[in-house]
Image (cartoon, rainbow, N blue to C red; front, side):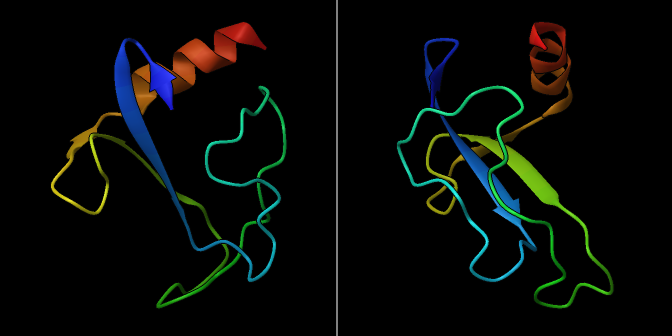
Length: 77
């Protein structure tokens, strides 16, 4: 994603198998459903694990606090 002049990676984990409704690089709208929450891996119940990274998520990027992003996005709705 391009925002704030930076390349950002968004990581969503524990999604229900085969439920992803979007593809990499796609522009999405506020409130648009991306997938269905599940309980994959070692999860003990359905939940969403969400991370924002500056730089490549799996290749040495830097994790960012998602709260400021969530607050800004909430203000847009």
